[in-house]
Length: 115
Length: 115
Ligand SMILES: [Ca+2]
Ligand SMILES: [Ca+2]
Image 1 (spheres, rainbow over the protein chains, first blue to last red):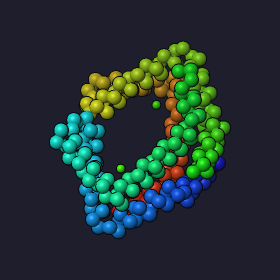
Image 2: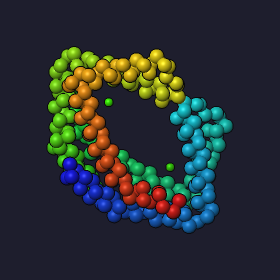
Image 3: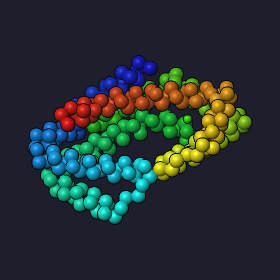
């Protein structure tokens, strides 16, 4: 299977050289160099992670928690740099998702038919 | 990004032509053609899915459920064809996991450094 691994490394390199990745990396650096933006984003991510963990443990979120998450999300999106970073993350995540679906197509065919 | 999509399709084709995939597909067919094996495996998968859903909903599994899952698992693994199929699935899943990690390496570098 060295062939598949080689091809995966080629694909990794193409992704790294893509405009999508370069934009993401640039925005990531800019946010990290901007103390206010960095702090805002870290605060948002901490809340997001806390609520995700609650949900994964099967706990319901309170009305108050949902409202807090929503207002923090609206706040961070209004920050131009963070908003752009989140859009770039969204595009990259879409691209990786597409790629994973393409690679796994033979398996989907196998498990989709005759079972 | 047509380049990344092209490369992903190439990788999908390599996987489909791999020994790992061919073995998996062959064992899958054999199990589907063997009524007893098919029923045994479907029974096992149904129990597995039921327990996974309970866990995802944050519910604890009872001692009885864990014992039942364990004994059904031991039973299906003793079936030669099913045991081989599960090993082939394990190898394919390892391969896909490796490939996903290789592809996502640039992203890991980005999020692992400077944050
Ligand atoms: Ca996010
Ligand atoms: Ca399995």
